[in-house]
Length: 116
Image (tube, rainbow, N blue to C red; front, side, top):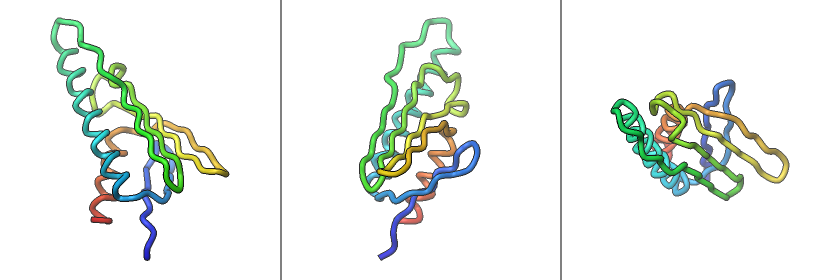
């Protein structure tokens, strides 16, 4: 049986780890929700009224490795400028860095196509 590995491309380099297709679907749903929040903020920013604050996304997955993705949609002017705080850790290593939201979405979609 082949192991399902997700590769997330970062601003500099990438990180690859074991990740289940089910967890990837949950992450995709959370990222879709984040994109909607970012689009809401961007649309209201172009108007004259103050935008309604959107709830930050905080996604967590525990499996062979722990994955956490956090983003506050209220600080980004557009979905294409947004970055997420990404933490990947296991018993021996912890990586915390920023990643471009659009790149993470592309990586998740590519992973789901490969395992689907």
